[in-house]
Amino acid sequence: MIVLLERLCLALRRVVSGVVILLFSVMMTAVLVQVAGRYVFNYSIAQAAEIATFSQIWLVLLGAGVAVARGQHVAIDMLPAKLPLPMARVALVAIALVTVTFLAVLAWGSQPLLRMGEFQTSPALRIPMKWIYLCLPMGAAYMALELLLSVLQRWDDPFPPPQVDDAEEAV
Image 1 (cartoon, rainbow, N blue to C red):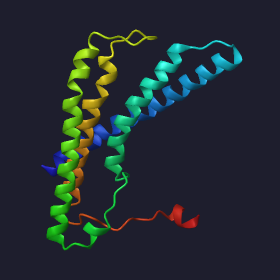
Image 2 (image 1 turned 180 degrees about the vertical axis):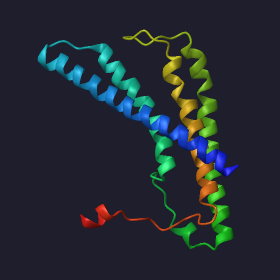
Image 3 (image 1 turned 90 degrees about the vertical axis):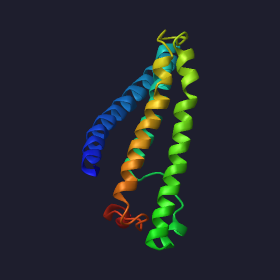
């Protein structure tokens, strides 16, 4: 089961990472267009500002899942790291359950927004807002999937000591 989940997450991780890179590129281009329009041509381009905003929203929610996959979220794990293995596993599962509960609340709480978004359109681009609000349940689901895989992978060593890159040591 873990091998199948790892393969699924690896394929999904590649797709999401590509989407995150694309969103960042689109956001930066839209910001540059907005700045050029405003300061070079003395004209505000509302569509560029909206594209940048919506790209950033999607970028944050999907990027959070990528950060979970890489173990890059801030965590205070000094206490759990000192626990014996059985208790460290309990702590790992407890932390994951709290996080998944939050993600479930996020996904569930986004349902009214999605329903309302069917009738709303964005001011400048005139696209249905449901496509923007969809990032909440999708981001939460992706983070929960990566968190489940993380728990399974870390089962034998729930709170390993931090690894220092050689590049960081040279600085």
